[in-house]
Every structure is written in C-alpha cells, then in structure tokens.
Image 1: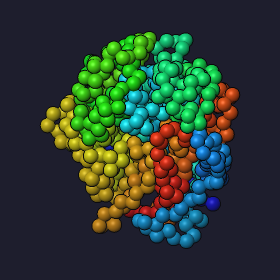
Image 2: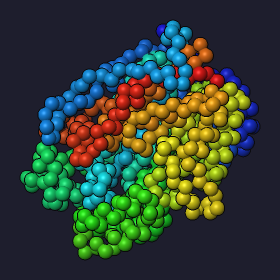
Image 3: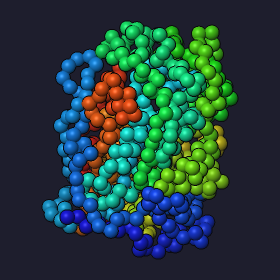
Image 4: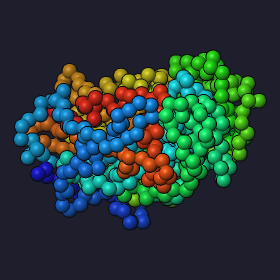
Length: 585
C-alpha cells in the first residue's frame, strides 16, 4: 500500500524561497485553501511580479484505497456498431501503460512508494455562447471547430465533468487525496462576458442560464431553417440529418434552460488560453468594431465558399492578426445577416476584467479567492503566478497567449526571465515543480510582438523547453490547446528530464479530463500517474430525456458524430492512462 505524505503542515521554511524570488511581503504567511463548507478564502503570500503563492487543501488523516470506478480504467464511451449517426454505450477500459523512456521502472516500487500530491486537469472547456454574433459557423467547410452540433450543450456538459470530479474517491493509483483542479485555458470560446460568467459558476457553483439575446427563445444557426446546420426541432431534412442526426423536439428550449452547478468540492486554479484573451481565439483585442458587433443586432449565417476559404487560410498562417480582413468581410455581408436581439452581456472581456472576475468573492467556491490570481496580478497586469501544491511541490501557471494575435502562443522576455528565477529558487530549495500552460511546446511558434510591450522579444516552445530542461526540479509541463492526448518525454544531455503532458479537450470527443499523481518511488525515481476521466453523464443517451443529465449525455454523443471531427484525439495507449517514470533530481 502506498504511503501518503500529509500536506497539513509546511515542513520547510518558505522564507528562503520567497526571498530568493524577490517576494514583496512576508507578513501574510502561508495558508491553506479551505475545505468545502468554509466561508473564508485561503491566505496568500505575494510573490514577485504579482504572483501569489498559495497551497492546496489539507490531506485527510487516513489514505484512501486505489480504485478504477469512474475512470477510463473501468470503461470508456464507445460507438456501437453501425454507420451514419452512431449511438454510444459502455466500451472496454483503457489499460495503464508504464513508460520508461526517461528512466527504468524498478521492481517493487509500488511497495516503497510515497504519494506526494494529486490533482485534476481540465482543459479546453470552450463554454460557448452559440448565439454570439462573432461565431463563425459559416466556416464549417474549412474547419470543424467552426461548427459543432454539440456546442449548445457545453454548459451542462461541463457541469457533468464537475460532478464526476466531486464523486471521485481520491487519486486512482496511490489513494492520495485530490488536492485541486487546474483548468489549462480556453475556458471560454468567444472571449465573451456571458461565457466567463458561465465558466466561473460551473467551477464554483451557481445557477446558469446558457442563453443570450432574447431571454425567451434561441436565435442562432440551429433554428435558421438553413440546411447547412442541424435543425434539431424542425422536420427539415438538413445536411446533418442526412447523415443520421435525429430530430429532437424541444432541444433548443432545453439547451437555453437554467441549469445548476454544484461547483467543485476541491480548490481550483485557472490558466488563461487564447480563446479567453482574443476575439475568435485568434485576433488581437482592442478593435471597437468587434466589441460593437459582439453586442449588436446582426449575425452572419452563411458565406460564399470562396470567401470562407480565403478567410480561413489567412487565419491559419497568421496573416491577419488584427482581423482586418475578417472585419472587411463582415461589413461587406451586412445585408445578408440575420437580425438578433442585442445583448451587452456578449461584450468581450479585457485581461483586467478576467482577473477581477476570478477575484470576485462570489466566485470563490471552496477557494482560493482568485483561483491563483491576486491583486498583485491586477497591479502588474500579468496573468502568470505560482502556487503551493504540497510541502515540496510548487505549481507554476504561465500565460502563453500572444496579445499580438493568432491562436499559437509564446512568452514575453519578462515572463521567461521570471520563470527562470522561479525555477532557480525551487532548485535551491530542493522542490519539485509542475508547470501549467495552455499551449503545447509545438504550438508556441507565434513570435509576434505584444502591442502593450513594444520592443520586447517573444520566445517560442523550443526556448521554453530549454529553460525547463535546465532545472532539475521540473517534473512535468501540463497543457492543452491541441485537443488531443499526447505525452512527450523531454531530456537534456546532462540527464535532466521531464514529461510534457497534453490532454484532450472537453468540447471535442472523447471529452476528457486527467487525474495526475506524483509519487516518490524511494529508489531514485519518481512516477507520474495519469488517469483519464469522462463526465458523470451516462454513455447511453435517450432523445426524450432533456434533463440536465440527459443533455450532458447528448453533448458527448453529438460530439462523437460531429461532421468533420477528428478521430485521433484520444491519442495512443501511451498517451492515455500511464505511469511516467523519471529520475529523481
């Protein structure tokens, strides 16, 4: 049986760490995020450049037993035999794969093992205001991400994922308590205030009406009578029904009905993604045209194929970072747009508003207030920070979005230098480090200048990898963005090594999150266990069940059947449920 290390008492003097990283104050002390039911926030200590240091909730006194129920080690949603639109059911489990790419797995380690920490990663929730005027469903022929028939159910789908985490008994392998949930960006889809409110209530609890515009009816592409899109309530033989999609009367009324999230029963932390910062996830913010269009009364539903191809090609190569071409196209299509109810709630939110919303006590849930962000972040206008995972494990959350535009990422020089200082201090204090970001190393190739920091260099994934590899404390870089499960070993010539763990989204099938456990094998190696989980919704669906749970089940099944959706996002067995072994520093 694994031994569990309690994080109830900080064993190491943190003053040395704070001093080494240049903390602005030591007076606040170190505190723990409080357990469910408490009303106060965690105590934070300010760190350099506006980064707080916080710690997760206390571990229970007794260890929990290893288990598989409620994880993909037990079962996974799988399509039933057939063609066309396919129903889902219970499928065979995904087994665990031991990966010794970076270090050999030694026999007897399970008996020697000490659990250090465990947490859950959410990523790419993409809570979508599907009626938003800036949604570009008309580009469905160019990219599957433009039109997803399941998107109108993103809120009940995310709530069901919260319900799954709340039902977990602890960490599946070591039996450790789960210390927190980290969501690694693209929490919203359109950089809209409506979506940000929904996201915060999903995570911390509350009632949500996933509707905008007309409070009494849906006004989007799915009741447009256009054959281009699935019209769930209508008898119209649209393009998706021709592929087998069902007619579900009452679907749209149910999709915009109020739902309730219990909120996570764990502390949770937030990392920002490109869809949280940029209109459409790819255009530099600040253009008043897009802000006015977002809250206005017109929505484009169709676009000539040739114009759509030109727009998307330009987006892919980063040729229109400020959206000038996109704006010109929208202006040229004004007479072809549908009239919709204007809504100020659809306005884009700024980075400052994003931080303020996280810091609002109404969204604290079980803590910590700010979910990693602090008042110092507001003052410094930064969205990166550190937090305490366990006694000797530090979490580092990065902001990899490039405000200059485009959906790929990078880091500015000031953030990269901050990361280096943080890792050096952790190395001096013999601490392990887990790094979180939205973008993967391969998707950090956008070196466009940040308009707010003229003259500052931007640094890509290769440079970030070099910085991480230069410091022994780094165990893993945990990220998303790609919507695909992928686990990559990284090693340096001097033997330093770490794992890059990229997790699939919760908007595209297979709609997963990941439990990650850290364990010292007490034999010179450390194991990272990764276990994928689905939402709590049943695999079987019922087209007459439009309850909150029924909608969450439909969300998964519709995503499997989405036209043009990729079929490789689950990754290989080596990217799913794993034991990742590496040498202890």
